[in-house]
Amino acid sequence: MIGVGKMKQYTNVLDKPLSRGRQEVSLSAFAFLFSELVQYNQTQVDNIAELERRLEDAGYAVGARVLELLCHREKGNRRETRLLGILSFVHSTVWKVLFGKVADSLEKGTEHEDEYMISEKELLVNRFISVPKDMGAFNCGAFVAGIVKGVLDGAGFPAVVTAHFVPVDGQQRPRTTILIKFAEEVLRRESRLG
Amino acid sequence: MIMCVAVVGHQNNPLYLQSFTEADDALKLHHIVHCSLDVVDERVNNPKKSGPTLNETFLGMLYPTENYKVYGYLTNTKVKFLMVTTDLDVKDADVRSFFRRFHAAYVDAVSNPFHVPGKKITSNAFAERVSGIVKSFGPVTTG
Image (cartoon, rainbow over all chains, first blue to last red; front, side, top):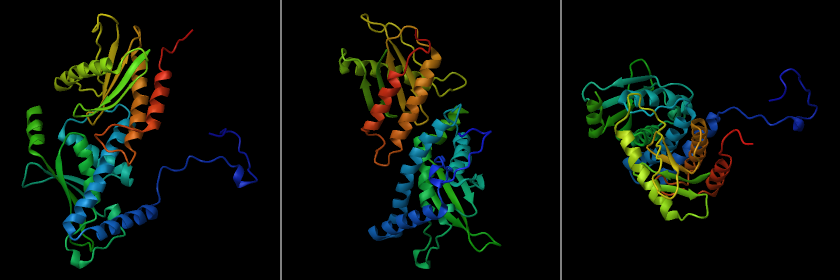
């Protein structure tokens, strides 16, 4: 860091030291890259389920690496062994690192014991995407679902993660919900840990 | 003097094994690392109340011919780092800082999009960084 006390006037912009840069990527760059990713996958598959699966696989790889990175960066890292612990980790830390804010809400499903939902008013990846009617219920949030799946699998909580649109009254664009359904063994382990 | 470092995946598959002394053969080091995996598993399954991330195995005289210690470290994804050293009085803080830097190098290696998780780490940059970390390992007070 240049000496805080003295301010040097640089006559030539080339003489300025390189700044470390903000740890952010421009949204437009990411949106462009993501749209290319979706388009590329669209040409390779015949149906929607396959497209969702491909996006999810792409997100899975990201999730696995994000988990390693975050656990290293967090000082005083503790290994999450409890369900609520890992869920709140995903909901706050992962979301903050990836999207710059924590997720809107984390809820427990009412019908089944093993279902949890993370909702977001507008997923960052979906911001510049509008899905044509003939694609039905396709949601590019499958990418984010893949990321969450990668994080959970890496931490030892196998789960099935999907993204859904949930219409909300009073808003023209539906809310996006990431539905997490944990595997049997996770629930058994959780009940054993008490 | 660090003899070797090893990275073992979450299914106890070896991801990386590097030895730093020419005299010993790799097989013996493999065997040592393999035996210490059992101790790690034992610690993981019966955690002491606080459940810490750092896991240290301290084996003393395992081999009649030489003394060494094996230190272990467990990451959040059940990937284990093991380090075999022949120092007799290595400090706890040194080992922790070693593992922290090793973890940083590991995270960088895994972030490689071409790295397949579960396969061996083949990155040369990772190997160089690890050698650098190992070389700079040692008691802070030297001479």
